[in-house]
Figure 1: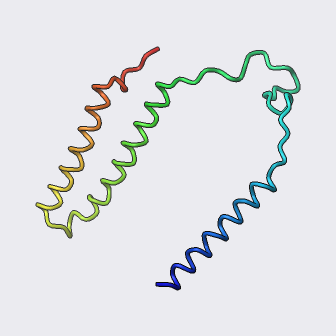
Figure 2: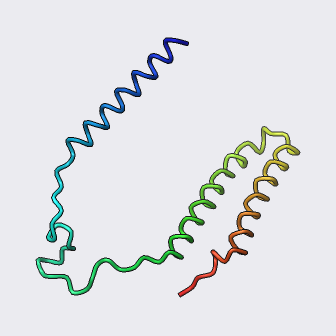
Length: 117
């Protein structure tokens, strides 16, 4: 047990030292107007490149990612169809899909799925 704790502390110290050195040595960027401006073939930009970002689009994207990952968790259930107890497989799958439907219903009632212009 003592050996594991010693190795854990040693690994944490090496990781912290590496991150600290990387942080100190990577301060090479200079903040000036030319480096922060968008490049348009040597010309000054016509419009501002800092357009406002739609928060609604971001929320829809996050919801999509969450449900996409959860659907990906259903695929192993299909693969164990032949070797599993059907009652247990059905109850586990039903419970998982029920949780997904509750989340979808909650997002729907909160209005997160309505696109507002």
